Image (cartoon, helix red, strand yellow):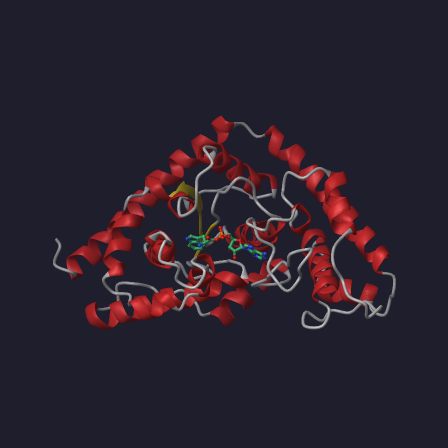
Length: 342
Ligand code: TYM
C-alpha cells in the first residue's frame, strides 16, 4: 500500500483508559510503524473536542502526556509522521462551520454518542456535544484521510463523514476524498493489530464499553495505574457462572473481554489466546495471567513515558502544525471557493 493517509485523534481528558489505548492508540502506533515508509500518518490531539465536557485545568499537561504515550507505545517518527493539535490548525473549526451547512439535523441527531451524552436530547446539553461529529468530519476531510483507526463506538461518525462528503461532492465536484467504509476500516486495522474496531468492556459491567466517565474505579484501567491496582481491578472483574472459558461476547462478555485484552496487550493473535484457554474452567487462572500481562506492560510503558521530555514533544508539535496548516488551508480554500466565499 502506498500514497494513502492514515489519521486518528484521541481526546485528552484527565487520563487515558486502557480502552482508548487498545482501541485507538496502540493500533494507530502499529499501523504507523507498518505503513509510514510510503504513506502519510496524521496523529492529532482533538483539544476542541475535549472542551465539550468540563476541562480540569490540566489540558496542556494531558496533551503533552498523550504524545509521550504514542512514543512510549513504540511510535517511530519519520518525515511522513505528523503530530499536531487541532486548535492550532484553525481550518478545522472553519470547515466544521461550513459542513454544518451541509449536514442535516436528522442525521446528526441519530448519532448514538450524542443520544448517550445528551441523555436523549436533554435541552441543557451544550451544542458542542451535538456538533462534535461534524468537527470530526472536518478533521478527517481536510487531509483526504483514507483510513481512520478508531474503536467500534466511532464508526458511526466515520459513516456520517462519508455521507456528508458525498453530498458535498455531488453538489460541488470531487473535492473531498471519502474515508473507507467500516468493513474496510476494520480489515485495515487488523492488518497490523490482530483485531480491528474493538470495544474494550467495562470490567464491572461488561455489556458496556470501558469509559473514562464510569464512576466505579474498578470498572476501568487507567494508563497510570500502578501494578497492584491493575491486578486488583482485573481480579475483581465481573465474569459469569458458566464455568468454562470461551470467546463469546454475547453470553460471556466478561471472559471474552479478558481474552481480548490479553491478545491486544501481548500481541499474540486472539485465536491463539482463545485456543490456549479453551475449555479451561478456572476463571481465576485467566485473571491472574491477564493481570500479569497488563501490569508488566504498564510498568514498562510508564517508565518509558517518564524518560521523554516536554521539549521533545513541543518540537514534534511545531513541525506537525506547520505541515498540518499547509495541507488543511489548501483544502479549505477549495471548499471556500465552491461556496463562493473566495
Ligand atoms: P474518544 O476520545 O472518545 O476516544 C478515543 C479513541 O478511543 C476509542 N475507545 C475505545 N476503543 C475500544 N474500547 C473502548 N472501551 C474505547 N473507549 C474509547 C474510541 O473509539 C476512539 O477511537 N471523536 C473522537 C476523537 C476524534 C477523532 C477525530 C477520531 C475527533 N476527531 C477524527 C478520529 C478522527 C473521540 O472523542 O474519541
